[in-house]
Image 1 (cartoon, one colour):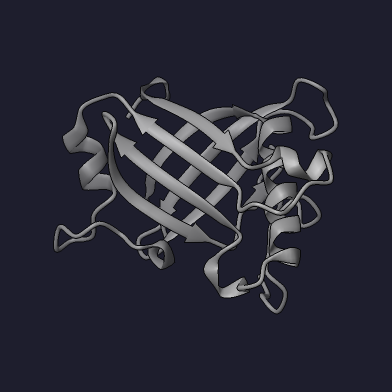
Image 2 (cartoon, rainbow, N blue to C red):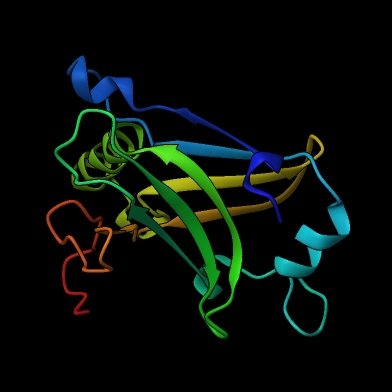
Length: 158
């Protein structure tokens, strides 16, 4: 699948900078391509969509994290098979801002079991899956985990 088939939109992250009331960060991913391909990638062998626990979200930097115009690749993978579900290019600053908001939301949320952020995937405007997630891993260009930039729930050992 081509990365340019995807559009990413983020909501509920500005409250951290503005010292506002905590809101769960949301990332909405719209897919505009051959729908059958993404539907297969989002599905398990029985044809049902993967649930949140069967997916992992990560960001792999393509540049050093301290560069002002650093970019990287956001990926969603199938936790069971390790296969990529999809990938898309994104600015490192945007992703790290999102992770900071999710971290702060998790510290302030009344119900920590409800996830720290939400992912909505739409196919040509129609909602396909919604995931409530707690983990978002960040790797440098060499594949090393950047713990200080990642969103890792307390008590989780990697």
